[in-house]
Image (cartoon, rainbow, N blue to C red; front, side):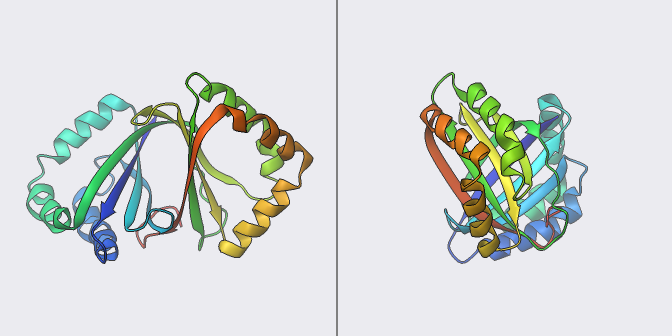
Length: 211
């Protein structure tokens, strides 16, 4: 299994239109026949005017084959792409190897946080081992949606997604976890392995499977 996280930066004022077009015209044409849609979000805090969509494929070869087929679809090239391309400033893609998930939250109506960390060269596996070893302490307070390592795109990077009921719940959960001795030990040993940390708070679009 391979996942692809695509991030599109939109022209100011157009992000809602891009998300709506993806959920109506795009889903009508594509469905899950050219990769399975796992989640589709709009950025709320962090880099603004962005949509992020997560797709799953059996492997990189299937991804390439399905995307080639999609590129030949007359409605995709003749209707969908002309509808969204004028609103896009930049497109980025990461191929991700799943370590865990994605696992849907127990209840809908969440906001999501995407955290991407870049490690020092050669240190990413050690960081992941520390992280997964400490997850039992962190998940006392909220469950992780998914964890991935980059296969293509930025190297030495790990991405993880969390779901919260709202921003107040996020703050309360993170404050509680920070006091947990097991999680404190992880926070003590892991930062020296990292060089950069980024966070984006996202809201699920109406057509997102992850709500």
